[in-house]
Picture (spheres, rainbow, N blue to C red):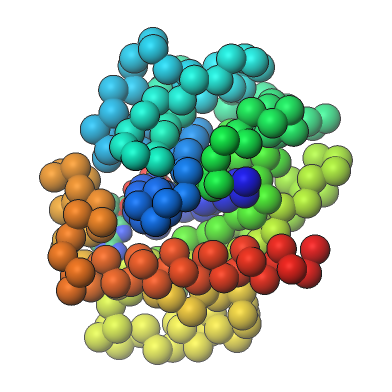
Length: 256
Ligand SMILES: Nc1ncnc2c1ncn2[C@@H]1O[C@H](COP(=O)(O)OP(=O)(O)OP(=O)(O)O)[C@@H](O)[C@H]1O
Ligand SMILES: [Mg+2]
């Protein structure tokens, strides 16, 4: 079982889009997959048409309040969700020094039924994001290819590093930076890419996700890339991304 957090304090870079599409691809490929939503916006539930106000499943607030009864909601075959709702903001400023609640549940084996757990996080530098990082084996930072995004990526990396320093005995691995919403025709793109490659080396994921209308429209239709035709660029790119993530996880498993 591997837990992967998707983090970036910048809003709208594609955290939720990445969580939702990777999770559905992984589950379709036979991996038992769980999404934990730590974002008060609750966008994952809206995207996947799941009632985030239901009392019938465990939500992420209960995880943070230390529940020991974990009953995720079923989304589809092999895919489950622990939804969030806006009440979770009361945990925003909590100090988690000394140990994350989700990490404790992980250590107690609560997520062992799953092959992969993806954690969606809010666009903040808050303890909700630290919870996600602390519980994770890996974290991934998506970004848009924009001039100011370089600074945003550096800030996200520093935030993760500080989190690792402040919480004892956690060692999640930085999986890399994902370039999302790429428009190759934009004149600044090549320059931006060169700068990011220089800064990140192989921590920049090889797979890039293009800016595509079908991705922008998909939450409205409640669709993810697995619902698209095999020729769809969005489906091809996200499938590639899923392969690269698996590869990177496998390489790290071999090393450690
Ligand atoms: N590759 C893409 N092409 C086109 N639109 C995209 C792409 N990726 C994301 N979007 C759109 O951009 C918007 C922001 O994406 P998303 O909600 O995934 O970002 P986020 O980082 O989770 O935002 P927040 O920080 O608010 O949680 C959404 O409307 C989404 O549909
Ligand atoms: Mg989001």
